Length: 399
Image (cartoon, rainbow, N blue to C red; front, side, top):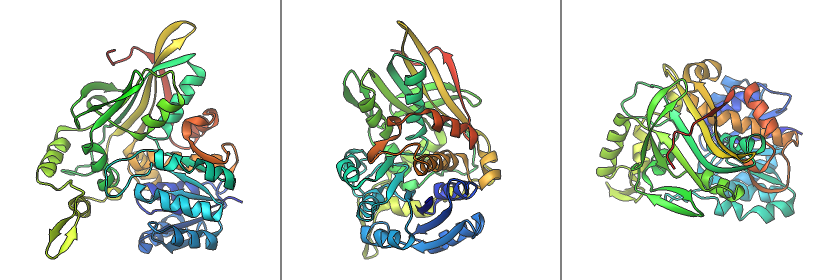
């Protein structure tokens, strides 16, 4: 059985739904659920009612609601592209009903800007005993970057020592200030302290305080800032030879200026404030007035470049490779009506789901992407819209 239930109806979900709908050989039947039924109905219309056969309203904050829906639909797999706050309730529902699970971002408590895998890794034995699998972080970063690292370790090195994941959006959407995925999650991620792994321990930095100007293939030189990103946590665990692991993301001056102003006036806070007799969270209000990331696709120009610089030892000699993908915003819009940031997250989720349904990747328990053989996943990236390249080069980073 290859029936799937997709939870979420935002920009990434739209890509997942449409890419799954194109591949009936992997996905025999697609069901879609979200808090907002009208969004599901719109996606059903776009993808075709013969492919998205059922749409439902569900509050994914509540495991009992999700479990009831799973029993109704009887999917082989739940693809979670809702909010990171909802990972645990959906995992609880999958445990209760004995259904496989996949997500694209790790759990984050709603009342604290802190994302880490500990909460989800704690489900490993329960999923294993139930005979079901959870695949965590099956987007691009995390996700493809984890697989790039595993591919490099398998094919290019005897030991990997230095890892720098780089994420560049060289596109232009024409908006004064907009985020390319959920504004609430995006801003929480960027405004927390940076963190990287070196010599067996974590080191912290002030937010957006460490900068490198990096030259990205087919994009050019962009200011890149050190952030903490969740794939670092799993990669340093599963590749113990790493001496240092870092993550970098590009931001333009205009974006950072807007962000600093919003931060200075309290609009990025997640602490509730009193307003006209009710409690509101400033960041949630900001999300409501910013452009919907799903609306940015039309007219978006330029491309992304996301990849991994890996330095290590092969046959006693040190070398560096860069594995990367370029993704064109306009081409993504032409194919599925999405911008490239949604596309680069949604396509890997579809591929990960296909790997599970075909039992190419299937093992009871809770797993990260790099824990499976990377080769077939890498082949499917080339086949389904995210071609990658490997170049041997000098590392752009100082020791």
